[in-house]
Image (tube, rainbow, N blue to C red; front, side):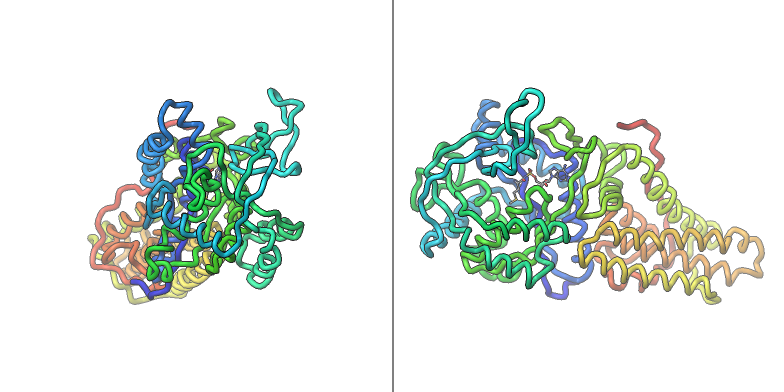
Length: 520
Ligand code: MSP
């Protein structure tokens, strides 16, 4: 199915100090929908995800739990982070851990290369470090604490005080890359998106960049600095390199040149690492910068970023156990404009499940298939006497395919789904207007009845192909019921509306069954 062009997309790699919540699953699903869409567009899509396992935060959590950091990481990866992928139906091509040898060895190669090229020097640093962010903070990044921390300055993201550190470290001459970065943002406006993220990054870089401390010596849970094993590599410097070590950097040149550069999907809290530090590191190493860095918004609970540390974390399985993985994927991709913050509420989720998935899409599929069974003995009619109304549906199929494709090209996943939903709504309106149940009463209307059912079945086929990246399970069931050939996930998006259908339908269970239990 591949046309040979590659689309390499990544999620951030997740800290293993805790278990996943729906904010993490949100990032995963967005990247997965994009990867699936590109795969169905004939590209060699490659989705990378994984875990970020070094640094003080993990070390402290492991110590507090009486195990080594590696034991802790192994436990969390196997019991929480890998299972998350199944919970929300992620089709990743690789899973990298920063404790993998392939990562550690090649990250060291990268560092040595930068050192040899003169981009690294020894220096001293004193500053406020937030272990939650794993980052030195500027005074402007701190806010007044409340409650237990009243009277102190705290991290604006974690609401806890930072630690004053004074260390002798290795530094990366990041300050020398400011002009090149500004030129990059200027020449390639798509490099950082959405626009709000781009503007924030540009004004940050315009204020002037400092050099970056890239090693720590007060603890040893990390990759050893290759020329000085009394230091470990700063956890962010280590983590960012996962995107190239997983893609073959330093050990598989063919793979690396095929995959790189990548599109990075990240939360806006980690935008600067990806849009400033990371391209500066790559520029220093003479490696092409990423294709794009897209900063998505936060899931908010009670108006604040949902987070485990603030006890607002909701486990993805709390949603999927009741609603299923398709509903999880659909809801977050549809209800929140990708790139902006969005509030999660159980009420909104239940309401959209019922009205859009169950009544809008699910019922449409059940009704059409039931009518083919009832009026045509299950045989899908070819249809002949097509009318203007039928042609209009055909037109909608083509129009929404194009509109959704355009939306995905600028990562507007919510717009793509909204476009596809025009077809759901139009098909529902079409069935209501054509009244196949009334046509079925008089044999004289047979040709018209067949044209209507043929049009409705084809419309459903188009929907199955277009929605497969978002709701893979429901569309696979629908495809089978329609007698589609092969897997729906192998059908080309750009030819979604060419679907012709097979001889017979088979019964279809409710795609989105009624949910009785109260949730929340
Ligand atoms: N380990 C770093 C990333 C290194 S990438 C080289 C990290 N990990 S994280 O586990 O804290 O966060 C991973 C991702 O989850 C980030 O993109 C972050 O924005 C996202 N989210 C965490 N909480 C979130 C919400 N409440 N809402 C949306 N996304 C959120 O940062």
